[in-house]
Amino acid sequence: MLSQFEQGSVAYNMPGVYIFEGELDTAALSAAFKNLIQRHESLRTVFHQNEEGTPRQIILPADIAATAFQVACKDLQQEPEETVHRYIQQDLQQVFDLTKGPLIRAALYQVAASRWIFTYVMHHICSDGWSMEILIRELLQSYSTCRKGEQAPLLPLGIQYKDYACWQQQQLEGDTLNLHKKYWLHQLQGQLPVIELPLDNSRPAVKNYRGSNISKPVSGHLTDGLRGLCRQQDATLFMGLLASVTALLHQYSRQQDIIVGSPVAGRQHADLSDQIGCYLNTLALRLRFDEQSSFTDLLLQAKQITLEAYEHEVYPFDQLIEDLQLHRDMSRSPLFDVLIDYHDNRSSAQNAELGTRQYATQDQLLWQQHSAGEQV
Image (cartoon, rainbow, N blue to C red; front, side, top):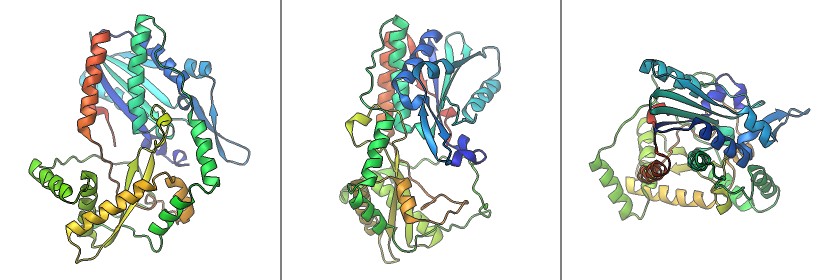
């Protein structure tokens, strides 16, 4: 539905930008992508409306989808850096057509004799953050074998996204998820709060997707203090951040009933760990307190609410929105306006370092993530 609004599809583009250095075999890279498209049905899925206007997913045959997909290659060695950035931004912000596909694009820009900038974009309807890591890992594994002329090392998947979708629908139609449904309906009963912050400008009647990024590093002293307080209360750093953000929102809004969103991977079963698809779920974490509450009180409540939410995280967020029968406000997201997306960057950095060493040894190809191409 959102993709039919102006710029809606661009807002749900999920980009990745990497720098490749060394000896690159473009034919092997294209072949590796085709292996991934054959392996993951989600990468060759399009969406059509039936006669009743209901959208349905259609999985294209592997040979047709692989033929339609091409890695766009361009030699920019003689172009200034500004031109290179312009090409990258154009690629990342190109609109997807959900009815035609493919819902993944890739481009390779050569900027020096042994240096390339590699970009890929997937639509969020068939991908999430976990999927992005799977794609780049499997792509480099497949590239390694294709370059050597060996058989692809990736075994066929035991299940595909359609199997998960069918299972989830069966769960929703039965009694299995009733306990989880009751929890969320109880947690979000009554008048739901809408955060009201003192803004410089009035909120538009229909939200747009024109935003920007603001980075603010937190001092090591403050971080250590928060970690220490969390340890004292047997809470995680995320719980401490949730309490901190809620306290900050209260400081500006004076509201004492606040909902903050938080995404979870939604991959409770081991068979989903290597799947590319949108398994992501969202939790609505509601904290209620009064002026007499201390920060420790708020932290303990954040701990309790977070642990309960994890116990019931299997219930789909979109189904919850439907169950609550919320009035649709086109100027806001449903349920909350603030979301915390927490990542342990130490683990990501270690994984990236291990991946670089592994593939540099095998193929004389170094790769690193290029954060300048990321967008939020």
